[in-house]
Image (tube, rainbow, N blue to C red; front, side):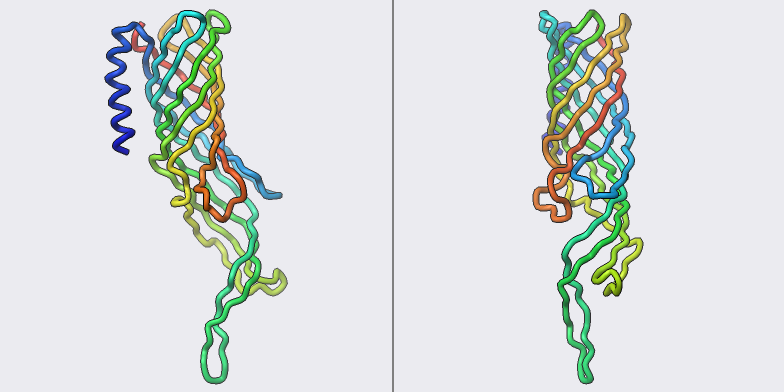
Length: 241
């Protein structure tokens, strides 16, 4: 976190130099719309999350239809999901004999459904280039790196353990919290376009996709990679002329 605050401070002091060099900089706000995406189980459903995005940006014109850009953004990325789950487990129970109670266990299966949500807040640092398609439209492409400021992956589960006809036990509305399994860092690709007006307002649309999983590598309940895939709609307000 100290490293991030230090980076923000460097960015802010850099804005002073940017103004002196007549580079464009300003404020940026908008919405993230999307969800973490992975290999979905059959029957799984979900809803994309919509969250705010707010921060500051700068742009350096290279003078040949090209420009370089950087941003610091507070970014909220969430979604909800309803998915089937299944796997191997060990069911522990007590065997009662005429003289004693003996702890026992059985290797068996579990199956059920999970209702959950992501509620993740990131510091996003997009770095990208743009190409002037026309006088007003710019094509943007590059990447981003993100730090998870506050991450939540919570929900509830309805689970049966054992033979479906005669389960050992049934659990209903059992809460779960897998927030500790979320990766602190994310990085990925960015593609989008910006419309530049004659005044101080710019409007844009971009899409980002992560290149690493939102979960830690040793997370055992997910097979494969679950990537952040989000669309951003945004407005930029130019501070300098």
